[in-house]
Length: 297
Image (cartoon, rainbow, N blue to C red; front, top):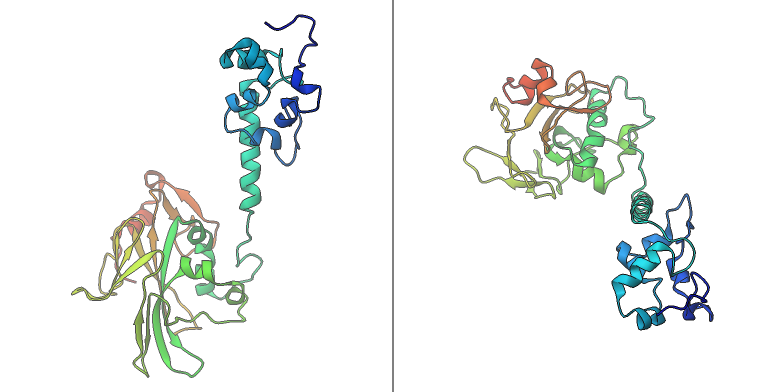
């Protein structure tokens, strides 16, 4: 039985500086207000937090761990004023949010601060950058152009994958020209007859198909048909031919990987900020295009 003469909140273990109050850290309201509560973050559950303030001598006298936890929660054991369960959960959630914010700092988009006036292809890439980086959208870019040797080349580019592997600021600042590579989804050099195809983290290449070249999205397993004669390029997929003076031809296939419909507010090729809106409030014309009923541009 616990003696009434023993100082409240004290225990045999605290006299030599080994009390559990030290382990609890911010039990009495400590912790960095801006950096999360490190003391609370050390405990997986509220029960673990209470256990950290129970001394062996407490269990020796009480012979009941649950009763010891109750005494800690009521403030009769442990160090300082204990946290209530609600406050513990609140602090733990704040600490976790702070930890995640440090791990995933907000990264500026490559096109930010760039004047893309008069460059519709670069503007189209800018309109899609955030959505491709976040995974809301996966875009396939078909480019037909000329390389540094003036050889005609063409290819299909996984835009989201290239964004992760490459710095796009030189492209948006126009100090570098975006070109298809042999490592992209598909590549063809019309002069050397060099032809390659590669799967990417987002798409599987289906080259040996009687319907021509197809791409399968690895997330939802939907098929994207890039045949220009095909009216419907696939479920949740739209086809947009972009006017350009930098290349011979540019076509972008946008594949939605979430239920909410992606648009920029004025149509897929507009310049306003991207938003997510549900199909039941979408403008009929945009919805008509998204559903794949529009003819090939």
